Image (cartoon, rainbow, N blue to C red; front, top):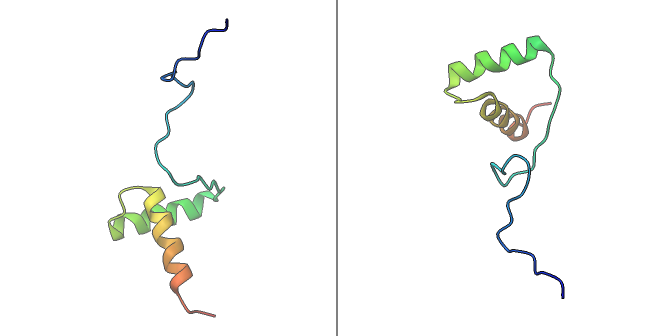
Length: 64
């Protein structure tokens, strides 16, 4: 008879840190610097938060 597999098996690798899917992008150094500057002026706690907020602002704008 086969042994049953334990229910609480530890998974290999880094543990999940959030529920949202990751969207990775490559940015030129000068754009990264501008994002970091914007983040410090607008109270974003991380570069990721700054990018999310900037994307949301861009999507809400009714520009050309």
